[in-house]
Image 1 (cartoon, helix red, strand yellow):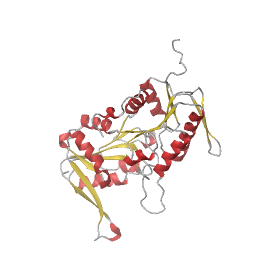
Image 2 (tube, rainbow, N blue to C red):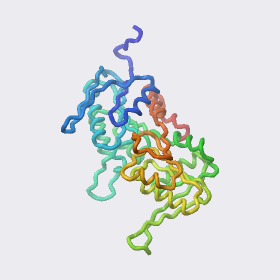
Image 3 (cartoon, rainbow, N blue to C red):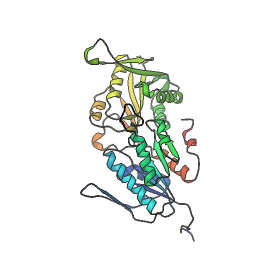
Image 4 (cartoon, one colour):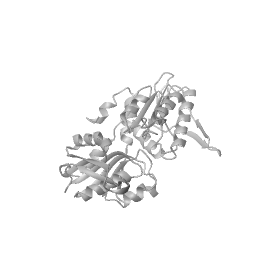
Length: 325
């Protein structure tokens, strides 16, 4: 019977929370599927209700949610969606979390601190998730927090292809804004063949109140400097890094980052900064009032859709990255 799903036939179903439906709609279009109609409500006391408006029994379910502010609300909504799918007999549930919530709390820096990234992984598992998919985790060890397969997607090919199309890599220096991002910057140098520089922030012992001094290690004078990071939150660190590069003779400063969190004063700082262009992806929604001149937003939807397709067909997700890590 043409067009009728047989009882044991494998079928993909895509679901989305309310945080960033535009990204999910783009992914659905690329996959050639419809997003499952969902009734989602927030009651007056802030509790969330979710009900799917068609059968999900036996499905290979992919639950998308981008964790922009308010993070806790969107995380809870996604957990409730996973629980609803489990109780409705979905065959497999994959969490698609382009920006993993609480990723920066991946280890204890001091006593009596939580490891919130592990807690989130446990919550996903307890709710009923079988698999996790995310883009550019803040720390690679988060993959080990989830008890099941984890597909760690990399935005580097998306960002690097844009940069190589619009800038001359021979005139460029890749810059890590701090010591913690050196590994990421090194991946960029491998991709573009450009040299590496590092900004080391320290405290000046000769100045009161411990004023920060930015030491640039590497050749940046007369160069187009590309600052790379996994996210821009309040933009304080990356804007200070841009100023340090300009002070040391950089011809032009641009930034490339995956997650545009853009909290608090970030937009004002970036608008008033030395950056000529800030390149981000749409793992998180950027409302019109948070956009600014010089901001370039690239779509991560093609990468996510290819990864979902590979998981659904039992293909290789690693093969999507063409030499990226």
